[in-house]
Image 1 (cartoon, rainbow, N blue to C red):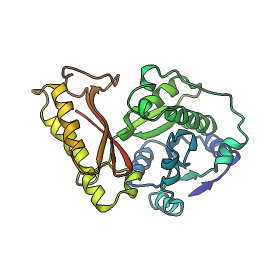
Image 2: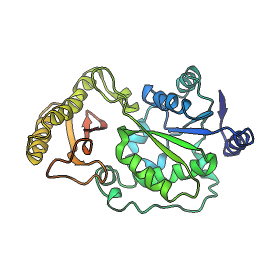
Image 3: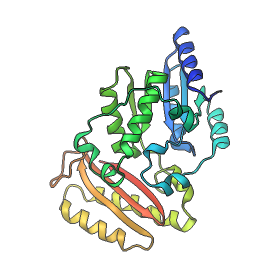
Image 4: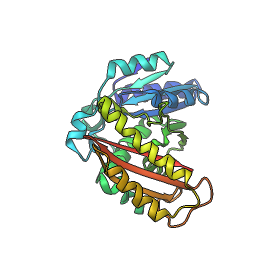
Length: 281
């Protein structure tokens, strides 16, 4: 596996692929890799010639300094995992490499309501940082496809908006959330949970599953209020939001959509660790 540290090397990698007529699949990550990330690599391997991941803990998308400071970093283990699963290359830049000699024009995307609800509301500036770093990486690598997991459902919608405004034609491949056997969505932040907190975190998926089971015979407003209160009553859980929305717009719904268009969104602190999850049904 080729390990790339500079923008110059990344551009050379891109150009070499083009000369060889090889397609590129891109898996952007912030490291602390797990089987959710590997599932993206494996999906890309089915569709393209070369798969490249990036590992970059992007400071501009953290609205909470403590969250940035405590975000897990496991570079050596990440590299070994990517080698084990046959990733072709990985880009591991420093913050200074990305932003120190910034030679890109400022780039913004009008997200409309999408930028002001749920994660946009709770994490001001977060999506601006996501757009900034992905625009840089897309311009450098110009992949044929980018692979992203639907656990970060709203972020995937933001990236769709970004690609609509990007001059480089890149296909976004949305991949299913990967869960542990007990239902917990695999996340890098899970590494910060104690064994007791991890057990407590299972209540998030349990609640969403119970809501799904009650479709379409229950009142949505009553369900939301009931499960918000129920989760908040559990020691070590503080719910930020739980909502049932239209999967295409993320707007709250008062009556059930047809099957496949109902989406539960949830964000909660378990101890000091903020977790997000969703369930489409």
